[in-house]
Length: 594
Image 1 (cartoon, rainbow, N blue to C red):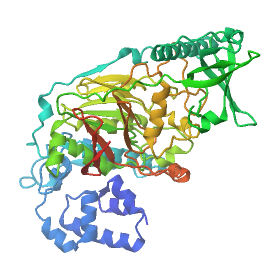
Image 2: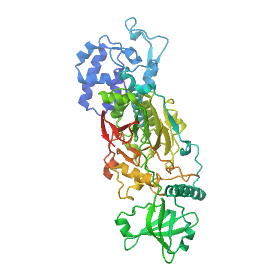
Image 3: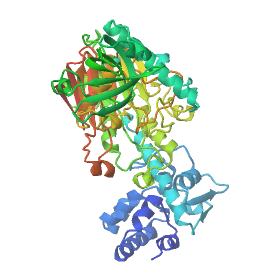
Image 4: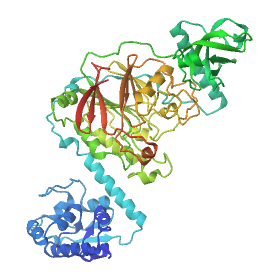
């Protein structure tokens, strides 16, 4: 049955979303629907467009009831976006723009007449010509449907804020925003690497020298040059090197080869020291470590008594005086079929003061900052066949959708956003921040974009934002690190003072003139994402937050046995950091100890 032709014979057009629905109808249902529409059209000549609202009316009601109910209804005003007795999207466009631009299937031309109220002038007196593209390719139809669906999504998002009670009192509105980006930690505009051999040499020299200095200063020891270590036979010495090789001997001892800028040397860690937990046995390639022990009789290696890592110092968790709240997000993945749009809208409504009890009211009123650790969108071309998993395949439109959501958040709430591996940037870390084209889609007054990683001072607390791509490399190399416990991974990175210790894994590294992945300064808050699992903890005074996701379990995660914790947003009181975390969980706020 040619649906379009039947409707055109009745002088009725059909919106793309309706057309998509009609294609799945059985023939008997189509005949019944066409019969109702035909009867209605005979009594209402100005009915010229079948949209979702009227399609649902015809499907669910008797046609005589519809005729009676809509006997005085002004369809022309309805199509033009004027106020009528049913809700319809307002528009400043005229009838020609409304139908041709929004539905992309009509070219309506009205000549020499102003459209007047039906009560004073019948619509039949209005001269108009309707030109309909009767033949379209399937690709063109799908394109038009996607455009219509996109416009419909955007219009719905743009109505979130005005649908929430505007009388809600925001205490944080009167608090001045305090956000300072540490420019020496942001690679944006400072990238110099070309991938040459010299770039790699410079990069690893900077890593070695910086972390060596931290180790020497921390333990008040001076490292002996590796090229001269063989001369200290039977003597106790201290060495610092980059791990170039790790092997286990037939007796279970661990043979480690280390390098500095001029030479290399071997150190041996005895099995009993590892078994007795005297020495931590998980050693990663390319991390920087210190070793103390005695050189062998022949000067060929050193027997290790103790190991040293750059590790962060133990300090009390830093707090501020004001009761201000920060929410932590990541991995929103707009564009994916698994994106939880309704739940994310619910969270945006919460930020606007749509609360259920006094605890939620207090948090929403005093929430000042939102930290987002990457993967705003699902991206395009991230993995083979990704297009099948997307409802939106245009990358800019994905970002535009996120920007529309953020624009619905009150302006006094400030966002700090770094990119992730699904975002439209180079995959190698450190990643500069988003392009100007993307940034200009977002509100300018309350969004700060930074690189991945980057350190930012937020209202007196130092935040380290890092998406977390290296987690995939750390898992499997360190026995205690687990996907189900994100803080177990984050703690290992803090111990090594490096966000991606091993070069050449799944996380690509760009050899910059300096190593931006070094954790040079101890953060107060370490915020990551990537693995879609929530986790909070405290390591030596550093508050660790791994925010979850707004994406349901993907087919890949299902194959890997990864169970995400979607739609849970950690929220922390900056005056009580490290003790309690509040979790916005699909609309309800609960608290738990860190």
